[in-house]
Image: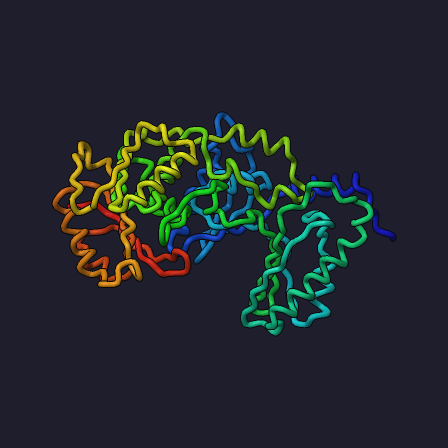
Length: 413
């Protein structure tokens, strides 16, 4: 029987096969913070981030935590929610298919049998990213070529049936191919640019902390229960900005950026705009009283001030910004139990004389002037963490910009 290339029939199939059923999504995480990210995803999917809009019955999330990622089942709108609202993940993709393949003709045939018209416009532009491990199809360039051929074979007849719309397909679509033990898993990237890119043209100093990693650290440290943040080695102000925006009632990470899912055949502009209007922050967060932000470098202070301007937060009365050396900074802490001190000290090439004595000095200053406060400190090595001489509850190993780092979290005693 000759296949139908009727656009109306395709629209019905998209509703039935994509919008109407649960999908499997993969969330790329900062290593070590998988459970922190899973907790945030659970809160979003449970509807606690939406104003008066409970999640429909029967769509409760099924979340599984793995090393380096979180997998969950949800509806396509849940993918929109996570991309728009979550502060901690790095990227989100949707599972398309999984099958066994040991030869290239078999790979092309099975890829061409997938109904790609449900996931991609026939005019979409993009790329294919391949990883292969313990599989006979080990040559990633050859795999990329065959997968691309299979996709084009399926989509080619749809190009005439669905004329290209001017102004669309500006965002490149990425197909993710993972071959492991001769099993081929195909996914489509839903996010586009990594999610630490919030859509604002931020100014940065040397070696900035990624926004998503800063959000992970803040959430792991229990920032939602705190009323005062002290960011005394602020650099570009990433901790300050993330903490401030996490409490802003009408501000969320995806507010001003675009995502790849906006060009999928199942995307509905009106439904997405309605969703954005309903998004907010959880009502159970403690009220934000103040943020104290410092850096020894006058240029860094100017950078933070510029970022507050970019984010339209320069008028926020709760932020106290000043140029000051951390080791001469002795704030009056009125409520230590609800005060969080976050530190991303210089390390590596920014501190060529070594870090052990530097971190030892940090620990001494904290014990003397910040007793009773919560702390979260980025440490480049276990030796530096030990040099602090602080008791911590958690020590997470993660990565920032390809460099392995540790983060210690606890109370100053």
